[in-house]
Length: 400
Image (cartoon, rainbow, N blue to C red; front, side, top):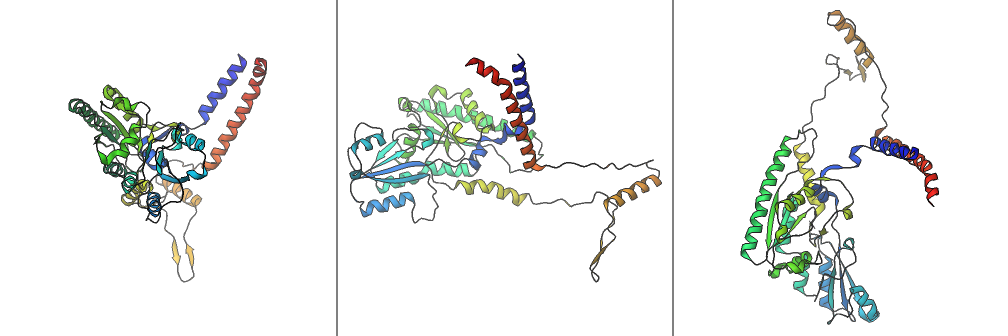
């Protein structure tokens, strides 16, 4: 019991010493994701036999954006593999398949490694249309524009093809987004503006996508392969909330498109960023071309352009005489120190009968700064952990 009490005391002290800001971040998840979470990179492999042709080299260079002005910023890495220098088993293991591709050359695409080791999500020929599909699409372009403009989240709505089902699900989603947006704005307006920070606005939008749209074949592959069983729901509407730098959350399907699930998803997106580690948060980044860093910086540039009024600095003592500069002798006159000002001011007030005695108390404040405070806290934490380990060590040995 004594050891248990010691452990409890140590934990309580740790919670008291560590500031609350270490456990939670006041920045909403969607804004933190846009500013800090770099888009994960997809892996593409061009498998061929023998030397590349001139056209293949040109297409691969375009896919890699070599020689471009870096306007696309596609989160994609492209590699090559000459099958003549590899064994069949190596290729099968790489593709996680029991057989080789039927035709060569072939372009293979994987999700980012952060999603785990999975089979390729897409395989196809390397053609000009394939390269264009990789680089961008109309819906993905709109998605980038809305997210970089600061929208909280964009909801991609995959239509089922059933007009009645799609209309009902879309209507419910629109109603909930409108209601939640109003509630979030009212809540934001009720919070006093104590700190000057870039404004965070709450705005949602919807992007419908037909499953038969040939221009969105790549986007459809990215979304429908993000979860293993989504192919089973091709006859139901599916929605994917996308936020940050194109991060798509889990899918809401059919009857799952309801008030509770929509609000739960929004609560996560607009809630405080409790974990800075991206991999510990749900979702998968989409393959998109966007300059996310520039988009994140624009909020601060606009903020500093508007928030540039500096208040006039005034002295602590209003009646303090101004310093006189003798330009000829290059000396400064009539600059009383702080003790003289305090003493003179106290005498003046006493003489006028406003106060009997004015006592100026002097105190020293030990300013450790952020680094010093952090160092002291870490030292205390390490000490407490050592003490706790020593206290608990006999019990651990007894269990062996």
